[in-house]
Length: 454
Image (cartoon, rainbow, N blue to C red; front, side):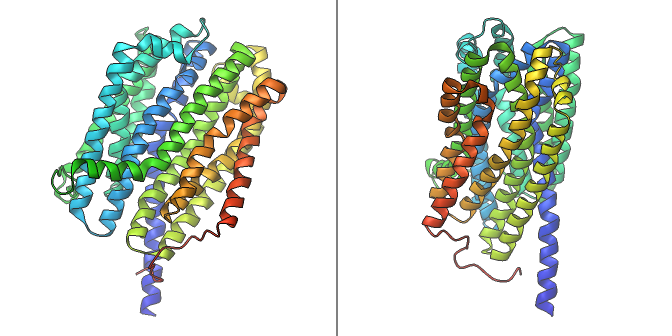
């Protein structure tokens, strides 16, 4: 009876922890996934549809910055979680210190190269349309100059959440996005900065969020993760961090390549109208990413702690809750898109009849397309937690790279079905993953796992 009560209590603890982490990380995802969405809505209404297209054309840059975060901080966050679960505080502090120092260094390098030395060349690489190019260049340059604020905001959010303060992360991200929203209007409309003001508002919002997250260390009990430079060699720690975050980073860099390729194919195939419609669809993906990112970050943090404890039942509970949440959120999102596609288009300032007409079927098809995408992405984290690294790495590559050839083939031979490319590609990936899983007799079971949740 005592053991059963203990298990019930711990199960309740996992339930509480899961939703505490989940909502915190969903709010964190607002910073990474919905920053462009907020910018797109405001720019679409205060500037024009080409402004929305310019923001969408800049998304490969934003995704690349997010890739650096995943490679460093998501990987380090899992190592910190493992170490805290095993009560190895010095290891956790070392991974924390080296992850943030590496994040800041790479962010500054990207600022110098992309934001200061080659801003025009970067914009021209991503935008071939002369009508949209000036807007794209103005937006991208500020985005590149301010990218260290993006990486540090996401990195600190991950570490503070793993260190047991998900509520502070929630507060920081809420205020971050509120500041971004308010300054968008101030910078664009009142100060007349145009689309440059949209990027600047996002950077300032992140700086405010960073200041709030740093308050985590004001309390003595929250000083487990403090600078720590002794122990394993620098390169050894970085190697472990990068190898841990590699599957997520590979998936993200593949998505960067996909965004770049897809923008180029759609722009050359459908022109100015099509790239705006595609921008709407990519903003819809950001909404799905809001939920999938929050779910995956929760699985990484809370799931890694269960792995560190060798707690099979606890890990299974976390995974089940993750899949249940992602299913409900996708169903609700998909229904809303199918019922209100024109309202979504108008939300981004769309008033041209041709753009509005083309937006309806495209949004509905993409709403369905992202469902298998979300399941596959979450499944990749599950494979990683159970140390099936090859499957996780395969999914990382396949998740985005499969879309590129499918998109190219359909654009070349059946352009009228262009918007179905993503759905076809993700269904192909799902079938291949299922076949590989069965063919290799893969099991989801921890080695030397405990059977109790004590």
